[in-house]
Length: 388
Length: 111
Image (cartoon, rainbow over the protein chains, first blue to last red):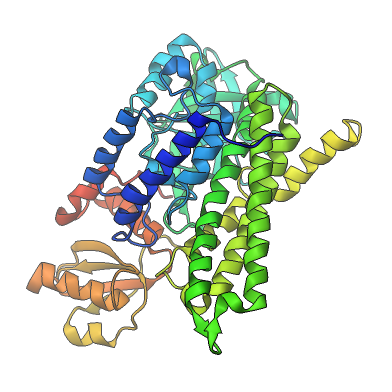
C-alpha cells in the first residue's frame, strides 16, 4: 500500500500541527495537568478559528454540512490533534467540534429534527448507553435492561454502567432487550430524553482518567413513546455494532499522537541529559528504547492507515480496524512506558504529560473493545465463520 | 462506599493548615453555621497541595470561613465535579462564588 500523503493531506496535517503547537500547547502550560477543558473565552476563540479554517465538525457527513474528510485524512488529523497533554481523550479540547451520535444519521426525519439537528447546532448533547453491569465486551448477550410494550409506549427498566456524559446529556441512546431472544436479535435502540421520569444518573464512576468520569444509570419504569425507537424493533444491535467497528480507526489513530510527542520529548531529553559523563543518548540501553519506540510508532501508523485506506476504498476493513486498535493501543502504551523510564524521576511527575498519557492509555486497551475482543474478531475473519 | 464528603470538620486557621501534608485532594469550607462556602480542590498547580488551596480560601472568605474538611485523592478533578453535583442536588445551587461553574456541572440523583 502507498502511505504517502497527497498534497491536500500534507497541507491539512501541517495546518493541524501548527494549530496544536501555536494555539493549544501555550494554553495548556497554564492549565491544571488533569484539566479537561479550556477557559470559555479561549474555547470560543479557537472554535471560531476552526470554523474559519473549514475544519469544524470533522465527523459530520458532508451532506449535513461537515467538511467531508475521508477516513485516511481524518486518521492523519487524529494523530496530529492528540499531540498534547489532554489529547488522548480530549483532542484540542473539542474545538474542532463533534458530530453527535453517529447512529442518529440513520434516524427518521422527525427524529433528526428533534435530536440530530439541535445536536449539530450545539444546542443538545446526547450520550450512548450500551454497557451494563452484566458486561460490556459482549453487549448483545449482556444486555438485561428490559423494554416491555404497553399500548403505544415502551416501559424501560434496568441499569447502565460506564456511560460518559449522561449527567450533562439532553438525551440518551439506550439499548434494551425487547424480546425473549437472548442474543443480538432481541435488542432495540431507544432515543430517550434525560428528563423523562424514571431516568436517573445514580453515581459517578471514577477511573484512571482523572479528569473525566463515567456514570451509572438507572431506569425505573421509564415510559418511552413508540416513535422514539431508532431503526427497527429488535434491530438495535446492528446499530450499536456499526459504531463499534467504525470507531476503531480514529480511536487507534488518537493513541499514536501522544506516543509521537513522548518520543520527541525523550529524544530531546536523551541528547541533553548527562549521566556518568556522557549524554543518555550515547547509552545503548537508551538507544534501544528509542528504537523500539520508533518501531512501535511506525507499526501503529501503518496499521491505522491500512485500515483507513481499506475503509475509504469500500473494501471490508473489520480485521484491519481491529488490528489497528489492538496494535496502536498496546504499542503506544509501551512507548509511553519506555519514555517514562528514559526520563527517570521527572517522568512520573505531573510536571510532564507522560504520567497522564500512561494512565489514560491503559484505558484505551480496554475501551471500545479490549485487546482480547479485537483478537477474537480477527480470528473469526482469518479462520472463517464456523470457528466461533 | 459513600459518595459524600463525610470527614470530620476541622478549624480553619493558619496553624491547622500548616499541619496538613502537602497532598492533592478535595475539600469543603464552611462558616460557623455549617453553610458550605466553597467546594474546592487542591491540584498539581498548587505549590503545597491542600495547604496552598486552603490558604487561598482563607484569603477569599476571611473571618466567615471557620472550618473545613478534606479528602486526599489523585482523582481530584472528577471527585470535585462529583461533590459539586452533590451540592447542587442537596441545595439546588452552588455556593455563591461558584455560580459560574453551575452551567458545566452535571445532574446526579443519588439513592
